[in-house]
Length: 358
Image (tube, rainbow, N blue to C red; front, side, top):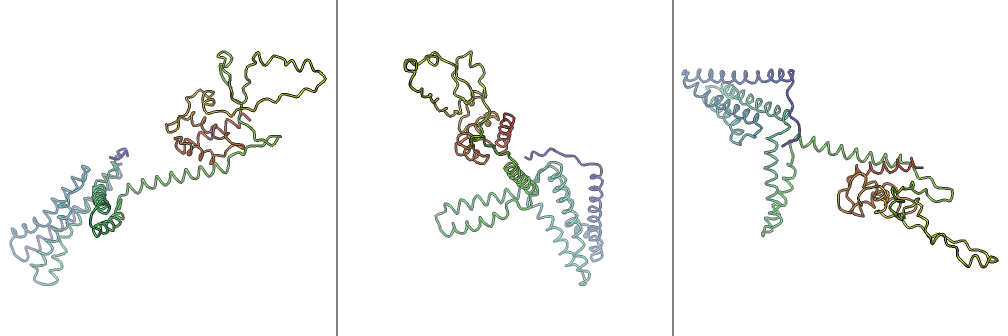
């Protein structure tokens, strides 16, 4: 079923549709009257004329009402109903042409019953369009597509597994012919495909503009790209946590306050300054702990906050920091899960945080 909410016809639409349906019924009735008059002029018996009208226009009217009723119920019409809408008026036309005395009368008698055929088809089509407009469901298009897909599935299986090579080749060709009919005449399918492509174009344009207008990272005075804003650890002093995140000062221990004896006993020698150890890279777990979110796990859906944590971690795994496209490529390569739009929003949040920190 379609997710389209049901819509009601406006008053103007109802008036127009009624105005269009009335002439269909009127001209169909005039066709029946004309057939009755034609047959009466030949046989001079009203009973015979009424029988011909009942077999032609009358039966066509019954099938037309069945078609309209099934369509208004959101169901497709059986093949017998659709075939009968054209077969019965054709039989009435042939009957009129056969009983006519001259060629001119034969042409007139043959054309007259077709008024009922056109009226029936017109009412059926109008009812179908009303249902599609109100419910968003085209039962007739679904019936055709279901039949095509059923045949396509059979021929694909036959082309892959049939023991006869000629049968496999024939089904392969038939499959390609059926592929052309998939979705043919389905207006809703076409509209949905247009919406999908419109979304993809919007995403592509958004990514292109984000790449064009993204602010570059300004190099520092020493030629090193600025690092991200310092991260603060809440409650580090109370819990005694020794952070290794850049920008957080580790607590001073007793060993750090001890004076090396050699430096005190040998004042004449030059004191070599002690080089502090290189800072360890910030891990994903540490950034997640600082942000107060669970550590992101590869292959599992991530929250918006976890996406920001992962992108921050990936961005500063290299020097200079990764760009948006490089970070997204590293995100996918690492196996993390996240939609393109959510990643772009998380990246924008990360950039805004860095700019405000700078």
